[in-house]
Image (cartoon, rainbow, N blue to C red; front, top):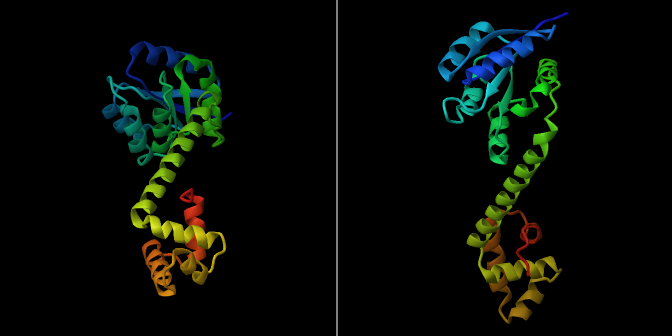
Length: 218
């Protein structure tokens, strides 16, 4: 049976000793080393070449574990599981962005051995307790992205140009739009030309669809 080499980064000595002892009871695991701070972890991880690293998110009173995860990920091939008592969406999201393959709440320590096995097998499902948090954070970021796109488009085109796009979306021809606004067809063509130049679009219909998708039409 292949033994999984585990490296533990934890600044709480009681947790470090207790978790090491708990994992030592697993017949398919070996704790090859521990670190209590970032400096030790950066020094030891590449040398010990663990298969899996258990990373405490809070080190010496700050969330240094996130930065450390990104740093160690660039130095060795170990799969990193984040351990924490924090459940805030943004914290969890940042941990995965840094390179963690799973995020476990410390109170669920009984799940750690199986999480290590799954990570070692490169089959690490996101813990159910944090999966909803991650999905919610993705939704939040998607909404922020959409709001930014709406603001960007509103800053680029004028209210009159939005009206022109709305009528194009409804199927009006440029002649019909000119009649509706009581302006020359040349004025409408200028509006369309300005819109396409600002939005770098290929056609007025494409620009109208983009404005519609962003909810700019009342």
